[in-house]
Length: 202
Image (cartoon, rainbow, N blue to C red; front, side, top):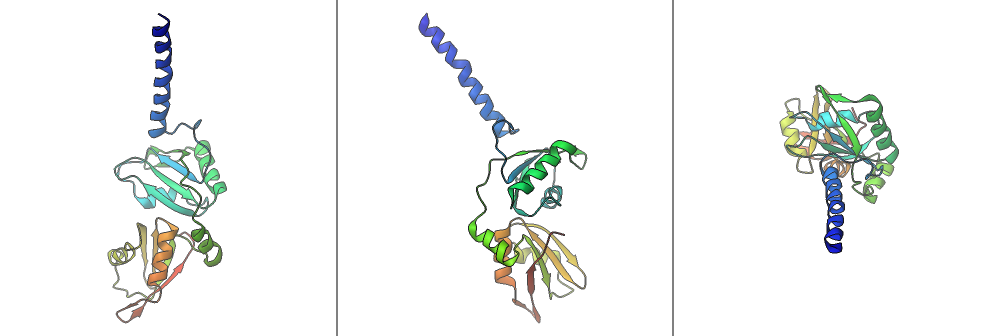
């Protein structure tokens, strides 16, 4: 009898553990997750764009990178600085952000790890960001053409053509933007010599 009781006692504990793990996979349980530079952004409307996710974090500080799970209703904003992530997370608790009518839930995500040292160095010494100002392009240049050019280096969040000025190209992380700037600044396209420079978020 004792053995049966012992086994039975062990079962619910094991199940409870599984339940917690399951919760962490779907809706993160704040009790298990520590503050970090990475914020989970959940309950996104169908068809949410990278630009819309980025706009939720605008004004809180520079993002090092962002990810959206294809076909899923959530993504992650990874800030350069922990304190900016904390301010964003706190605003989500206080104000209940919305996107296209959906109440957006902000929670801590499992930290992606510290920002890579070479990225921090680029930020410190060169003002690196994931935002690039592209000048000296033909007025006939389209967002699609620029997208094809910049996507060689990483995922593009958004592109705005600014007639007479050039374009603003936003990549989803600083490392990709740095690689693009490195390779494309000074590149000759037809009679145009591209100028690519870091800029602050739009």
